[in-house]
Length: 101
Image 1 (cartoon, rainbow, N blue to C red):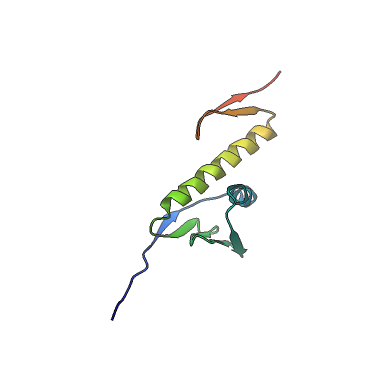
Image 2: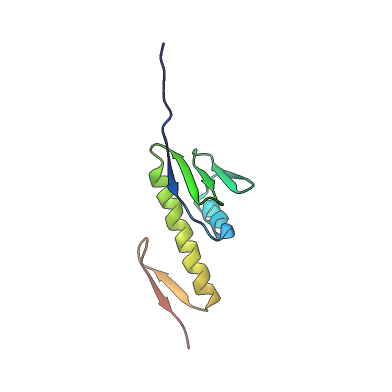
């Protein structure tokens, strides 16, 4: 009789500004649903926003890393906008801030 095992892992995922997280998910074009403090991605990743945890199937770590990078970029862009700075991104994670006087 065949048997199988679903492997999942749990990692820390702290998203302080949920609206930025929602925008990051939408900008990636990912399908997701929200129930209370939890977000379920159609890839099988589940985010518990209150607990600051992500539970994901084996092999989905790259997708979670992409989400973290996109969320971080959204946060940096938002801070820049609030302070009237301009951000010029150079690659995935390097940005140059400029402010006109």
